[in-house]
Image 1 (cartoon, one colour):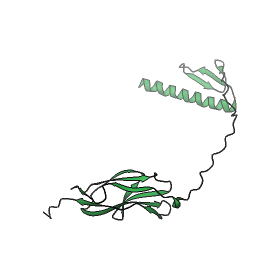
Image 2 (cartoon, one colour):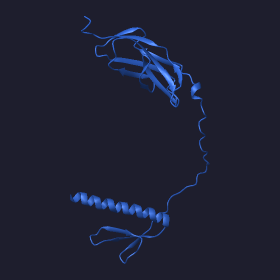
Image 3 (cartoon, rainbow, N blue to C red):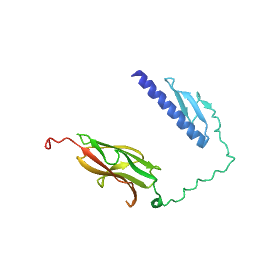
Image 4 (cartoon, one colour):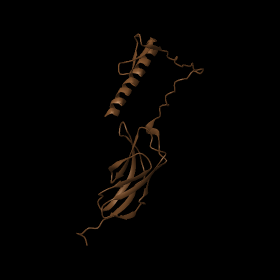
Length: 182
């Protein structure tokens, strides 16, 4: 408890010193330091008999020798004109059967070049969005029904939802054990 009290007092004095320093820099008024009855330092802009004036060092400034030009805005790019070289489902391979009784389907994909600003890329499962992707990688689809499915990547404009490009479809057969069909 005593250490907390000491820490609080020290923190206050540090704050007061910083605040007074900032004020003195702006106003250039003298700062005086004295001690109160308990011996703690007191900083003020008004002197007293026991106060001593603190001399502050001048603020160090410099003049830049170069003129910095503002950065030019990136040239406007027609987002709808961009074409991806690769929008490919890499795993599971096209036509590959996958056995998973829990209905999990791990899908890997390749997007080249990376997803462009203003574009949204979705992994589609049977023409329904299975989720958004941010670049090449993998996505785990859960509770997928057994049977044949079509996977593909679809790129749209974020602002309008306009379809820009679709990757080739990849078919997969998910095999799940069924107690009804022994």
